Amino acid sequence: MYCSSECRQAAADQYHRVLCLGPAHEDPDHPINKLKDAWRSMHYPPETSSITLMARMVAVVKQAKDKGQWQKLFSQFCSRTANEEEEIAHKLLGEKFRGQLSLLQGFFTAALHDDHLNRWFTPEGFRSLFSLVGTNGQGIGTSSLSQWVHACDALQLPVQQREQLDSFIDQLYKDIEKETGDFLNCEGSGLFLLQSSCNHSCMPNAEAAFPDNNFLLHLSALSDVHPGEEICISYLDCCQRDRSRHSRHKTLRENYLFVCSCPKCTSQADEADVTSDEEEEGEAEGETEGDEMEDEMTDV
Image (tube, rainbow, N blue to C red; front, side, top):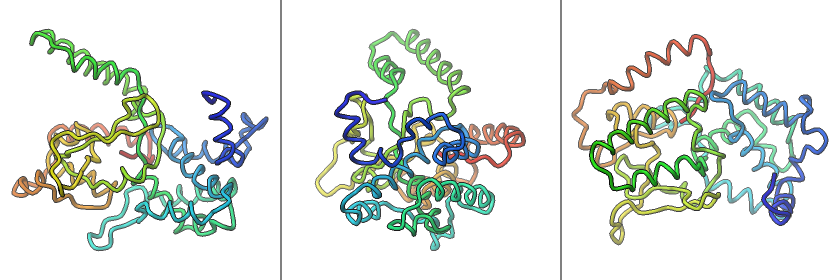
């Protein structure tokens, strides 16, 4: 669905002619539908924004008059599958998921193969493309609930009412998360070149947000930024940032392939390498769930 005929035409001109299913929209045997279904069956919670973003990248290049320009643009995003210096590999690209990735690559090739992008359809090229989206893909959140929560945060309330409201909101998120997983405030995924060039800090001086309730990303300062000071965002959400140094490093290593050396991590360097109590409890629960949902892919 499109918001206007102009928006629909812009999509058709840039990528949608390649991806349009037309009357085959409900056909389970259409190659693109088979690709989406394969991803849903592998990924928890089930969503299609990640694999569809990869498909749209291919479609943009296929429809472009200047294919080299788009290929050059996409090459500016980090797409490494491992950090050889630190001996870190992306958690979705390990031996555990090799069979699933091979199956996904087959569906991806059948649906979208293009000679100009032949390297993206090789085993290593597909893994690189997969890593590009996994590392740089920015969740696009335009949830009306999150807008309401931000408005609640701004209210001036007596202490007791503030505690009651915060408790209600915390429980509301927990109840909804049982149904939606981590995708409550995420309506899609996108690549933003300038935002993706921002390094991580566990004490960021800026944050990405979507205050206009559309796909336009705003990068806002959280504190005064002095001339020459690096602008850093956090690749972790606020709950993850409150966990132990070891817990934060574990998430960053597995998903972004680096060891954080920000001021917060440096100041906590002498702490024991143990996960926070909250994460240990989560891991214990996750092991039980994992027995029921064997080897499913998840991401941050």
